[in-house]
Length: 245
Image (cartoon, rainbow, N blue to C red; front, side, top):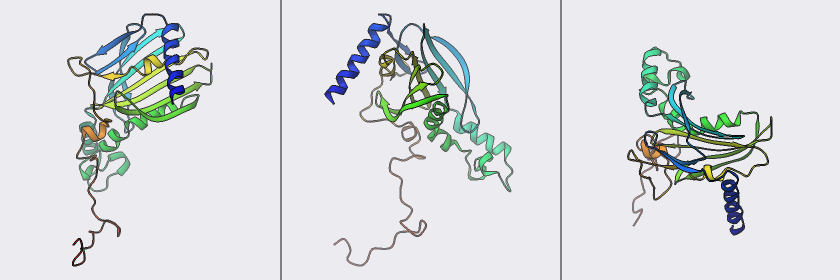
């Protein structure tokens, strides 16, 4: 473990020294994040197609320096539950809805739980479909916020992409850095990800934060209540007389 830590620290040092002294912390209060960038990013407004067909507002923060590319895409999922419920109610017949297309409209929801709960997987899946070999995929966290960590070797030029996908306060964050094959890993960028409040102050949790559990505790409780055990959800059998004494 100490050897691994030393190797990683060396890689961070090489990454910083190879790219000069122009790295600086960038803080964005509107989108609630902080990260070290090798220069000021350009900001582009765009849309992000969600798994269930929403065009969600997004912003891309990008720095290109020579052959190195760094970016953070921030997707706003905060309106997804309302939009999907409204879409389901407007497009689905009440008598025989198409369950996939309508999102259980008659049950009062439009697949928003699947959308929120699966956002990390959806964004990660996009990386898996690239023309690249995935060399690392793991559950991880940055600043104690859970996410997915990826490394890929791109087939076209053997460059390497390092990514982290996470979600905080119903915003999806996609960090991505691509460097040439001979370059050290961009650990300084990937490991500097953090979160800030509306005033730009750092946020730090005491335990690992999960967006779906934290933002929707009723829909995604940490420990769901049992409706029964066995028998297809039947109520649990009554305890025999004297049990527990």
